[in-house]
Structure formats: C-alpha cells, structure tokens
Image (tube, rainbow, N blue to C red; front, side):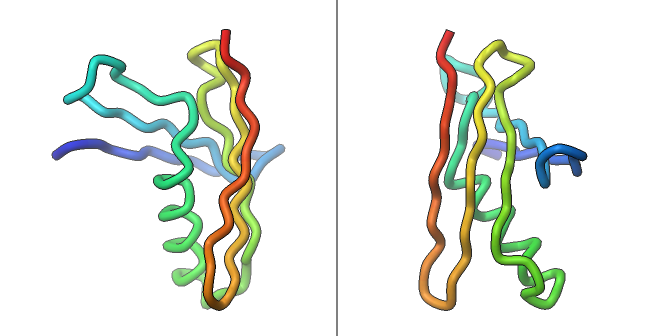
Length: 86
C-alpha cells in the first residue's frame, strides 16, 4: 500500500480527511486534492449522483488547516482549495 485516505463526516464541512503516505519523508499531507476528488466522486456515485459539490477539510490537526472544494460535472472534476502553511 502506498497511501491511505481516511475520512469522516463533519458538521461545518462535508467531510474531514487525513492522507497518510508512509513511504515518503512526510507521513501525512495537509491538503490532498487528488484524494479528496476521488472521495467526492465515490460519494457522488454511491448516492446516485445527488450531490455534486463537496468541501473537505484536512490538515487542521497538523497546524496547517486546509479546505478543498470539489465540483463534479458531467465531464470534469474541478478542484480548488485554500491552505495555511505554518
């Protein structure tokens, strides 16, 4: 296994995620757009495409909070975000 993306539902965002990469020098990422986009797409398909916009928080417990904004369209996955680097 190269990496693992753990998530849970959150009250002020849709989800909080944590991305662990044990093969790299940094064990955990503060913002992982690719993993967040894959999670959003999986949740979109699981719920019969009822939700197309997601906010996923990551990195707050590392002192560098981020918000990843995912929008799903018929042809694209749009990833935007903001992060604080301490």
